[in-house]
Length: 171
Image 1 (tube, rainbow, N blue to C red):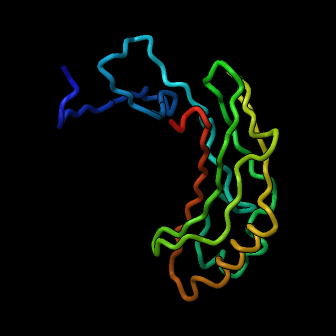
Image 2 (image 1 turned 30 degrees about the vertical axis):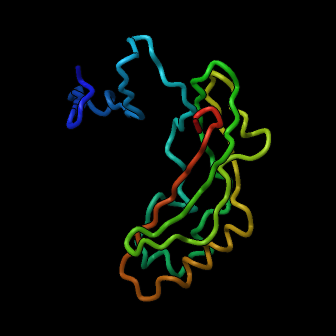
């Protein structure tokens, strides 16, 4: 009765006055007239926000960063936290860490995987942490672009995007 063109719904959440204890994140909405209350959508999900690409901060003004790219761009491992909702171990078949500048829409050259090799296997029903350092080539590409692509810019708005694909979700 609800599957028709123009159907809309909205989610509301109510929080306690005491703080940020009632927050939740909605990943998917799956509507199908053949599904029941027991239907679920298995997934591998990030359980924490990706780490900052900055050494000491989560954000900083461009005028402070642009002359200190080498010192402020993190070269340490980037931690990713996952939870596998499938009943079996799954492998992340494709993944990418991408950097983009949002004001100009420019993609920063360089890309790396979120996980490689055995780290791409995520066990069932267990929170896991994986660490990966950006390759030297990706680091160099990012640092070079950040040092040279935005001369005289008053503001640069960078976004890091983590992508992953689990083979069983490609269908």
